[in-house]
Length: 253
Ligand code: 13P
Image (cartoon, rainbow, N blue to C red; front, side, top):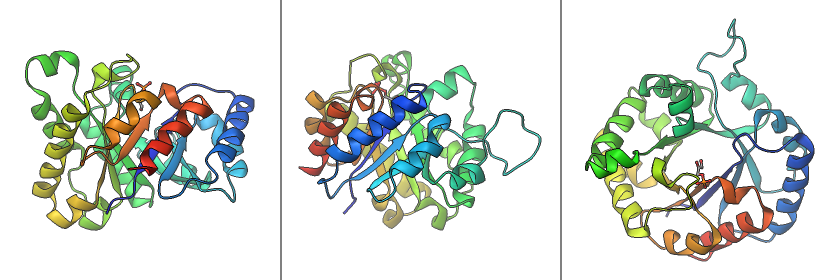
């Protein structure tokens, strides 16, 4: 049985003061919730402060990105060692916004995934098709190529620490989520591919999250699909109330 995982991706939002306020609210509202793993991915600038505030709670931290080298002359970058130092258990890799605005290729995603896992940070690898690719019936082809290249060379032990996030680009920040059944079909395809690339035992243990306009009004229905193991939430994670409701819908499954 895969434990549901809900990740709040705050993207480039919230000052240190705003982050502190929001996490304090979440600590209270999520206190009594069990059976769901809860992770927050604030901007780098808030990680240090949040790691102190969440001590003693069940909330975990993720970074939104990393570089693939441990240290050196890479101005402006943050290494896996540094996010471990900040208390991050997870890191989001290959988000479509990074693929689009920072030209992150599958090869770069692969380097980052390998460096995260080498440093015992759990990688959340994002995949997803554009609207054009979906309309041209290329969804599975795109997902397959992103996964094959992004996960190349991982050992079975490393793969166990992986989470996949299916985020159709056309559903991100648009208010238009994938229909539950539509998402489930892609998730099932991803799990089949993971079985091929690794093995059935590993594939059945990997959590596959859905992301793209998840909100309290659609989360329960999405969560009821067999292959949806949780969410990567953007906009709705910026409000304590909506994020809490989404987490609650996952623990009622
Ligand atoms: P929204 O929930 O705002 O659509 O964002 C999804 C996302 O990109 C999470 O990583």
